Length: 374
Length: 225
Image (tube, rainbow over all chains, first blue to last red; front, side):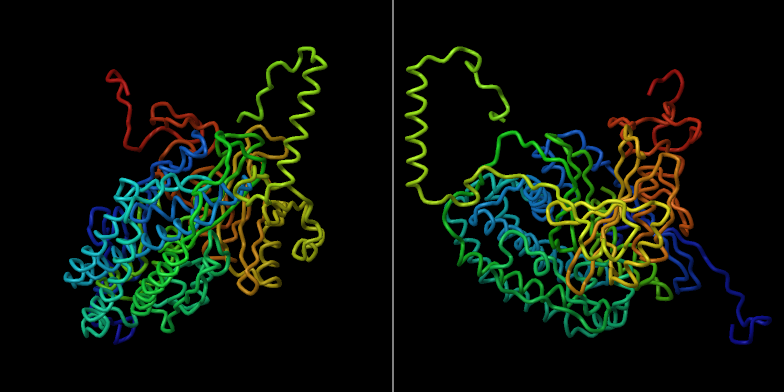
């Protein structure tokens, strides 16, 4: 429109494009309806629900412990946090306090899971933007974590490894040594990823200044987790509402300053370092003792509403359970999925940017459609 | 749970010798309990949390007459407010009380309840002192509620989800469409009268509200579905 509205230089029409749901860069079955002005995005509208399995409805039909395997399937690259969120909510409802050894083991599992989840994020985020090498590096380490999980509970992805009141299994022999070996070796691997990306000129051109969201908008849109911290707000459930024994370990909450994709990348890398720090302290402090609290065989709830949340790698993952007097099933169980709320900010973050930048923004939000659609 | 079952022999007459024996056992148990070190919290029988009144909470007091009742359970205040005034309450809480963050918005279906069928739950957070407050608005089945999207942008999709899964209408919402199920889906899956096994479009449970059509399962006459 350089010559004024009445005599446009080029007569450009807006083009409508449907992106996904069968597209590898959408991290699952996300569909975006976009209005494009050439290469620029005028409007992007996410369409979700392709993976809706009615998990919240299913919860209403099964007993409290039977819900736990279903929580694995919500955020399937991050099963441990889903288990943990459901278990701490139920423990809050029933008034169970878990033994310290169980709490520390939960933290070890959760932090290993955070590493695994962030490694998947880094791999897919980098591939989306065009850097395929980090994928091979990160999946090598992720596999070691999954091997540790497999050795502990027999599953690699859908762990189902926590019980209301503690943990179902004691550690196998030598597991802690192997875990400690991994923890000692891992920081060097983070440096390795950094040599590939952090100062890489192409990586910086693709991420710096892309997908900017101001702190005010981030709060207004309800962002949590790394997207919120990337916008400079120090906010971590592990610090604010400590669960299990997070109040007994020391760690920092990294925050960004430029509110862009590159800062969120740095925040997540630093989070991995902090996870290693937590893991070291947990392995050192791990007390002896029982791993299950004294909980009744059949769990019967008091009447009321209860909510508890954990800091999942994606943000605040909360469970809201409504229970009836002496009930054995949840009357209503709502999952507060971090990806669902974070994805809502996507249209705002990509407005006016190039189509190619949208891949970067989808990657940086670190969404998992299993959790969004439930 | 074993505690709930009536113990056998309760109604049978108790002999004198048995009474003596029982007293002896009780005395011995008390002695052991005295000598034993205090138990750790995870070894005790769990004590469920109890409800208490929370009308003296500062936020509830600040809302003055707008709160119908307030309840404290597991450390959280649930303030019940009138559904008609939800927009005023939310705006006041955001602007005057610093609740800048909407954590969650959801609904609960109580089909048999007299006061109204739906509870709409708002879960607010204040960053300054990390305080959380839960609001509850009770709605009748055919009653609509004002959208809070203008106050917290995050409410947009959450309200769409409640509309999709419960059929609650949010007035002045910028685009109240189904979000998890598809356009043309019959019924609202999280209502208690919606069957868990699902429905196909040929067996719509709300045929007058949602005319049949759309969806992946289209029952064909004669083939059965």
